Every structure is written in structure tokens, then in C-alpha cells.
Amino acid sequence: MIKLRNIHKSYSSGNANLHVLKGIDLEVKEGEMVSIMGASGSGKSTLLNMLGILDKYDKGEYQLDGINMNHLSEKEEAFYRNRKLGFIFQDASLITYKNALENVALPLYYQNISMKKRNKIALEYLDKVGLTEWAHHLPSELSGGQRQRVAIARALICNPQVILADEPTGQLDSSTSLEIMELLKKINNDGITVIIITHEHDIAEMTNRIVYIKDGVIE
Image 1 (tube, rainbow, N blue to C red):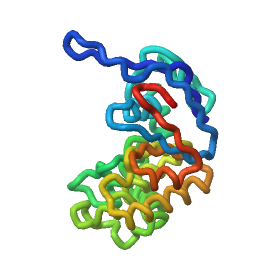
Image 2: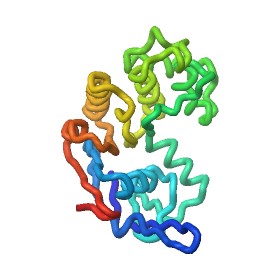
Image 3: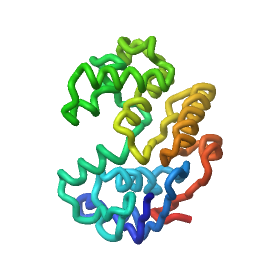
Image 4: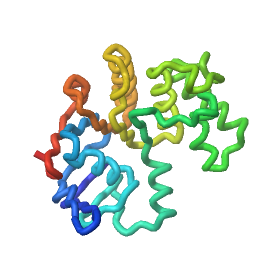
């Protein structure tokens, strides 16, 4: 599903050049649930940006579902991002003035699906995460765990092949974190590849494989 070969990424800051990823080789098979662990500054978030086609790499090769992601146009990047990947962020990143249903339906808006149809589909996905009764509540009216469930439903609505989760339990208590991880495991059991960035060992141990990154290289 995912193959990285000799991925390098550097950032320029003033006169300095920061070499963040230093020849990453990584393979994630279809249907795997993998966690990526590393200290702050190790390169794990930069790696997730590469996987999510959110940032370009300087050197190397990235294949997603057998398709080479090198030298894509912005339009092509957006196409593969929207059709093959789903994103879950630490803070849920919901639009504050839209209710749960509208937040989940938003990705379908960019596919020119009618409001009636996208709201119907969004309600089905809210049901999958146990939030049907909260469909018309704003994010401010939801708990942290509920907001993250809305984010998961939004990530799933375009039927992605891969879910990329950046510290999805980082702002949750231990009990709610467990609920979110059980939900992600259920999603994984449905055949979706799940990659989780985390610094929490107990969360990482709930995945099938742990990848450790240190100083821009995989240990």
C-alpha cells in the first residue's frame, strides 16, 4: 500500500539548513495498523506530512497504492489526497460554526455532491461512530472524545484506503483514548490501513507494529 525509499527532506531557516528526514525507508502493507513513535523533533510529523501529500520531499520515492507520488501537479496531489487518504488531527480540527453533521459532510462538498445527499451520507457515518443524536450540535457542545469521533467520521466519508492520525488521543483522558483506539481498530478490521503518530507507548502497543524514528532515520 505504501512504499518509501530513501526519502530526504530539509528546511531552510535563515542561513541554516535543517535536514529533517535522512533517507527514510518504510513499507506499510494494505490493512496494517502501524504506529510511528519518536521524540519531539525526530521527524515523525514531517514524515506524516510526506505520507499525506501535504509537503514535498527533496529526494527519494513514495508509492501509494502502486502509484508514484513523485512530481505530481497540485491538482493531482489534491486528487490522491481526497480519494485515497483520510486525516485525523490531535485537536479534531472541526469548523466551530458548523454542527457535527456539516463537519462530516464537508469533504463531499468538494466532490460537488448535493447537500441533501451529502447530509444523508454524513448521518450514516455519524451513526458508525455512535453520534447520530449529536448530529446538530456544534463542536463547543461536544466532549473531546465526541469531537474526535466526528473527525473520524469526516475522515471516513470519502472511503479512504489509508487513515493518517496525528496524535489522535493526545488531548484525551485515558478512558476516552481507549474508546478512540477501539474505534480505530474497528476501522482497521474493516480493511482500512491505519497509521498513527503517537508519543504514548500504551497507544502504540494497541497497533500491529511500532516504527521508531530518531533524528530523521528509522531505527
